[in-house]
Image 1 (spheres, rainbow, N blue to C red):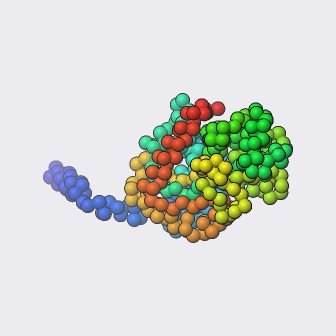
Image 2: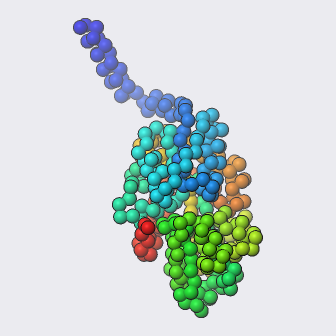
Image 3: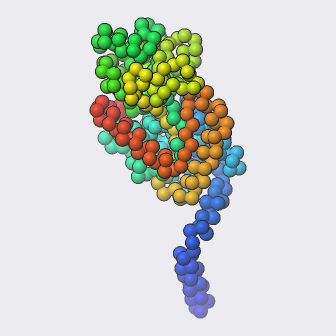
Length: 327
């Protein structure tokens, strides 16, 4: 009895002392992170721009930490199924989400979203901004945005623009162009970018706003015309392609990519990941991806949270005014 009493008293004393220890002692768990494989969930099918960037980042993190960051593709629900897995995962840093801004937009279009982007996730790092390309079919007699607007006004109701997925950055950018320019066109939904490009090249649709990497192969082979980019100004990788803002002042829109963890991810682990991601973005990733039209965006966790908040406010305004709803 005395022995059991002694151990109970000793255990209670140790717990009491642990509660009084300063934070740096507990940060030792972050110092040891990661000590096993990390699951890097990308909630879209392999093969797209998001997948390319995500796999490159996972490889760089594996090299830095000496532990495997293994890409786990979990497509479905416009990216929401894989994101929901992360929201419900243990908040230990071993299940992370890498996805695009569709993640923050799609819940706005749903009556009952599966999660709350702000409350259920911890922002870790903004990885890149992806300007979009405004592409039109060769059958459209325009060479630039001004020509497209003139054609649309001379042929009211004739133009059609594809949307690769409801609530995507391309969808919002397409609705924003319609509102900012004052022209009207029919928005046609597709199940992905591939069938949209097929119809654009085939002359069955007139326009498509999508990440730059998707349109480049077709443009290089003169199968369509890229008449503008949606970044604030021209890209160094495409100096001959004007920004939409040169014709419509103030117009600017991006898809963007980021890393999140579950809501209760320890701050020390989030900061450790943020530093490693920033290091990766300043190296090979910048050299390889910026010539392809992406803009690397190293910064702090607070920078990312602020960017996400502002972008969501703008997106919510477009979704509300355009009446975009999940299909």
